[in-house]
Amino acid sequence: MDTATHMLRTGRRGTLFEYQMALRDLRASLGRADLACSLAWHDVSSRYRGSILGPFWITLSMGLMVLGIGVVYANLFDIPLKDFLPLVALGIVFFGTVSTTIIEGCTTFVQAAGMLSQTNLPMFTFVWRTVVRNLINLGHHLLIVLAVLVYYGYWRHANLPGAALGLVFLILNTAWISMLVGITSARFRDVPQVVISIMQFAMFVTPVFWPANRLGKHQFVLVLNPFYHMLEAVRAPLLGTAVSPHTYLFLAAMALVGWLVTFSLFASTRRRIVHYL
Image (cartoon, rainbow, N blue to C red):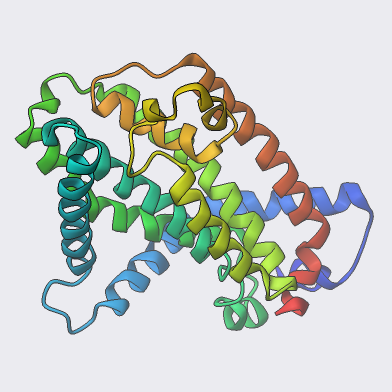
């Protein structure tokens, strides 16, 4: 993006022109994907600079939480530990990635205010930065997933291609939600608190710590829960169970509609985001 393009962020040339510039920003960010990865890696390394275990401290604490919740809730629900602990481990790891990406998405543009105001870097670069940073953290947490699947023998029946497809849907949907809250948080600084509250509530109404079949006749609650579908698309294949076609249709429609709405909002507010900051 040249200087003239950068200056156009404060001008208006009509709706079609705004969409063209938003597409140009997207293409430029994909062409600079290495920059987003470098920024994400720098975020992770700088956060744990001087630490012996680095980001594995989060993995260690998450592993202890998985063990504690797994043992306690398995006894409360009267479920064998070999059936319940893998469910909890995968639920905490993958829902944690979704939750953290969305919450950190609130500060995507706010934290990049200095770079956005002094450079002409594509704005999408900072969206990918947030997503990649949390995927790097997920990579560390997969040690927990691997340990549980191997220890309890689930690796023999795991559907890895199905889990990979579910992870793609999870990333696609988490990314647009993260960008959406990033745009709105740049304008309204109360949004992060609202998002944190929503994600805390979602954690308890989503079967992260409890089996979905325990809802009985209230299963319809899960049908309308997007976080359940994102979690189920990844967790079920790893546990060797089938994913409902409804889940894939729900996630595909959610990704399509979500990205259309978010991209339209970005196109209409792109030139004003820097001024919000």
